[in-house]
Length: 475
Image (tube, rainbow, N blue to C red; front, side, top):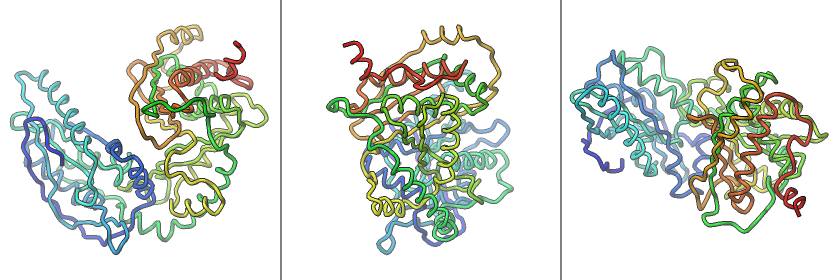
């Protein structure tokens, strides 16, 4: 655990659980392990930060909170696992017992209101600190834990998980277990399948599923153009730039378009991104990558493992469909992608090489779409607005530059996020293909298409001309 810059105490909590023999990495772990090797120092971004407020009705003294943490680690072998070389191969090695370091950060104040504010701020600061240093998976446990203490009580438990060991769904399951352990001291139900269980099953019963998925990827990838967006200019330094659009108009438009088309807001957003990409690239077929949680696989709903993997959505706009027709195509393509998103990365590499297709070790030429909103389709008919109101709200849209990166996994990544002032759409792009002025236009085209689609179907080409054609038209 990295040293803390704030006033703190270092403790350890002992844990014990059922032993388990070493197992290979899961397919999800293998894919992320390769991505971490490519990203170098940026692998710190692969950590999942969570802060849990201790329950008001449960015991919040240090001894009871430490006992809950030890019980959580003891019942989940994934949290007692290191990644080490065994007989020349990377393996998951489970410890039957051990000690987990715990940082105790002090927060103190004079009145209750200030205490609540201070402890939350301290917890957030501690979470950032714990996530700042990449995990050493051969020596560290796959989570770092800190407690925020006010006087004689613990106000928050801070946990930073390594994404190499667990995914978002597994983290939520673990936090539910932690809350029960804090409140009641026990969890009545058994722990779900652990990472080593998943790895062993992948060597056996899941092989056929992987074979089908690999065949789907080879067929789909062969249909895609070499690049999603054309080359525009020499790269800037740093090469990759992130630009963020925040729009209340887009937030409302997505909700209205989803209701009008009887679709999910995620499908509407993917269709809008695909439409802009198709229009800008001038191609009828484009490839979008998205993350699938793979929890629909039998027995994996409550698995504590890294199950999520990248899927391939092949969007075909031949025949010049209207936007509503394109949306239906996107929905079907997304279902196919999710059905074929659980696969052995080694087999995928071999199949790509056999087919003469590039298997990307550096930068993927296609677009990754990541919808990380927490409540994407809650109460879709909560507010009634007319078209004039939505269009007027576009005046309040902001587009701001964010961080720059020397290296990145994707030529283009679009993230959908919750923002206080509306929907957040962020694009991180290779400046050779999406220099900053193009990035802003790209985001505003998505917003504009969403606003148009909120009230009516749009005929092809859905939007006016892309930037290059616009420059030619202006002379």
